[in-house]
Length: 355
Image 1 (spheres, rainbow, N blue to C red):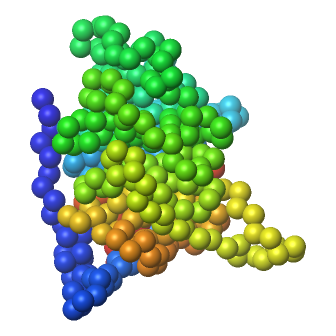
Image 2: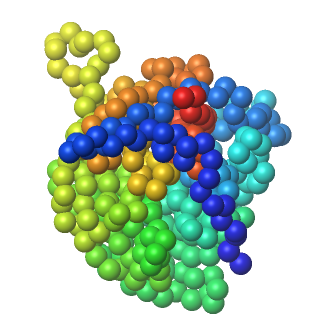
């Protein structure tokens, strides 16, 4: 049975209604919410859990937060604690309410997650090429990878065989499921030179179509807006690329960066990427985009319609509250709070609206 979805209410709706002022013959002027870190979220983890790198974060219909824990910890650290589970669920107050993950089923290098309209949790793993659908509580329901399309309801393998070039995922990085028709969008190309495409399948896992975003070394993230526009991260070329759902190119959105400390030779070299991951605001028009900029260790807030960077937050590289050490995943809840996971930093932080 599908979980009851909470209607869209809360502070975010009020902020966005107050934020938009219509100017005659001009694009709406957007006042951007201001954020500050919540140093008390989440609450201390149980059983002295030790986190590895955190790959991604996603939010369900009740504003429960899921994180993907890669479990890549030093063995010596387990002398003082225990290995945290692969998937951890927090309630809005920051309490751990559930955890799961069978290491026999999950790839150790998890990469992206998405919660669909029925609160099922979708996970993609880069090295194995697996796309998996889990129930909210962690039961494997559906899998694409290794053998074919696996459906646990009847134990059969079906769909396009994985020896087909169209169906084989090499390094899937992120995933989105269309709430209207169940189509599955996968950004496949987390590693340089591997596939570099957006692939679309139907709800049964049958291949529908694909396209290869132009000029991308790595197809690192992707999401689809309610209006059907597909946003793809061109991580190392400092931009987002926008397509329609058939793969027709619409435009670029630049995500520029510059080194805080000017290089001695005057040549800026981005080694992390300025368009690493993104999430859309939860207001009806999805007015804002939140983009992880690893090169500058901050979150860029971008007007989705104009592509203009409006603001940013983050206190640079470090482990103090509000700073980042290789931020990697991002999500937004119905109140407008922004959640950021860090790979090297091995933590999740919440940023809340203050005005």
